Picture 1 (tube, rainbow, N blue to C red):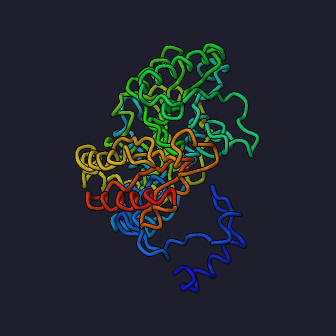
Picture 2 (cartoon, protein in one colour; picture 1 turned 45 degrees about the vertical axis):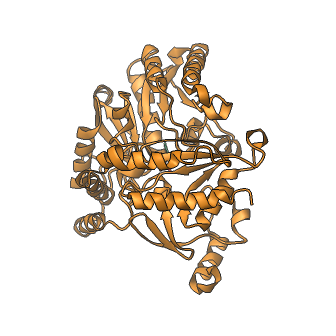
Picture 3 (cartoon, rainbow, N blue to C red; picture 1 turned 120 degrees about the vertical axis):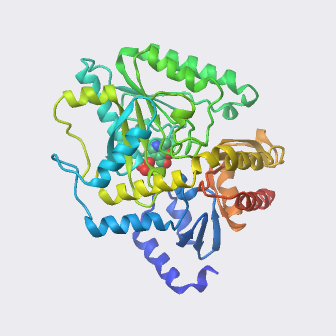
Length: 449
Ligand SMILES: Cc1ncc(COP(=O)(O)O)c(C=O)c1O
């Protein structure tokens, strides 16, 4: 199949010669060559492997599905009228203002002001700078440390990779930088306590409290949390855990940041996880589903009290050339309209999310499955070797093997360590969910072959 498409072979050759891919083992990829995708519609992608059902929505982002004409039209219109103008130095463009207004209105609690950027990493980096500036303006310049968790993923810049709690993102770069603290994640399965996940969650909270006390609460500026940890392995918080972490932050006057890069825009069956779980964050981080990945965009949403301090504090010396890019903002507005018009949040909450979770649960008890978990339209399946849990060892990466087998059966899922992760577009139908899990079942039935 692959070799019968000459121009793709040519592309693969160029790719080998000149393209360093993100998060890729090039030595492993080069012999076979990269996969080149050529088209997309709804939940399906086209490529040399034929049609593939995208069970990961690109990279947890294509919430409204591929090929949406409404977004193409909005972007074309904006590019035709005004392709670019920055929001620096007292100017801006209509889509940037409209999207800021929209997000400010939609965001829960007193989140009200939006700082635009181009990615989740930049949105988190922006939050870090705002937090530092805020603490300085409040007369607390010692509150510079940042608390996150093991298995967290917050991005790849030096600071956001320091916030990330994944050793493979840090070791090659000599990270974390000083001042980044990592509390345990409530990943009960990883420590064999999945049958008492709630108690384990509370133990994690107690350990976090000890860490705060040891470091000195007066030295910690903010706590960043993904409501559901995504790239770290779809770690779903046990009941009571997030509320207790929120309480802890409040008790020690540590700002609370919800990194909703994956969880916002309907993924969990709510516009924002912060709203669903009453997190009342001081800052909220958005990207991915903000434009459904049609054009890159990130946003840092800031509470009214923080924005007041910043605005009174004088010049805001931060921003990217493309902060609030009018074309990205036009894509964002069209994307939000689709989510609203097609009631994708409500559907995920009431119908498609529960169906997806039900089908996922059917894998519990499969001999190659140690645990399934999820919420809304995100899920994970922990895989087991033939000898069972006792034979799980770092580096066997059953998730990578499993994802390869599922792909051969017609669906893309993500392999992380020994698990499979799922996050299909929100437009997925019940029939397509059956198709996705059909491919997953055929794939994992062959996991040990
Ligand atoms: C929760 C979270 N934060 C931040 C990021 C970084 O976003 P980006 O890759 O757009 O820089 C990601 C990316 O997966 C993410 O999942």
